[in-house]
Amino acid sequence: MPRVARHTHKPHRNSWLRAAVLGANDGIVSTASLIIGVAAAGVDQHSVVLTGTAGLIAGAMSMAAGEYVSVSSQADTELADLAMERRALQANYTAEVAELAAIYVQRGLTPDLAQAVAEQLMQHDALGAHARDEIGISVSGRARPLLAAGSSAALFTLGAGLPLLCALLAPANAVALWVAAASVASLVMLGWLSAKVGGARVLPAVGRVAFWGVAAMVITAVVGMFVGPGG
View (cartoon, rainbow, N blue to C red):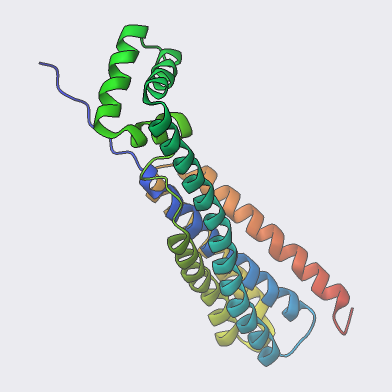
């Protein structure tokens, strides 16, 4: 008997990983850019730290609220689709079996085998079979608003905390440099970590995170220099 190949896939991590990476990346980039822009404008260190703190609090709340509203909308749509499918199963179970069998035929099964598979799966869990194969909703991929909101806010705070700490500890004449260096290093680490957790290629993940982060910081610094008191 041939040995069964075993692979470890990670689709169950998609929902929280996306929100976590988005939260951490946004925390680092937005707070670092805000601090660098204000520092480039020639503002004193106390005002820079105060601005960064306000940005951290406002950003974390915004991320949590945005993720919750967005993912809640997705969850509402999923529940509506499941309710519609539940009514269809109650109204015409035979037609729903045929519909599921047709899906399997389109995926390559013979009509007889597709009919048998549809009947057996629906005997086990009719709604689950249609949710997965007709609508595209799986248990691991279900929208979880609170999880998305919580992970985004927590990771935003963690990401934003590093540039803010650097702004607090850096010499007054080198705040922007310290924050930029620490933030780029953090973005590289974030890209590496997200690729490892998600099982993706490391170099593209690191490259895109670092590139857009650096671009945001450079643009904000230029704007700060031009609109600051000495601009």
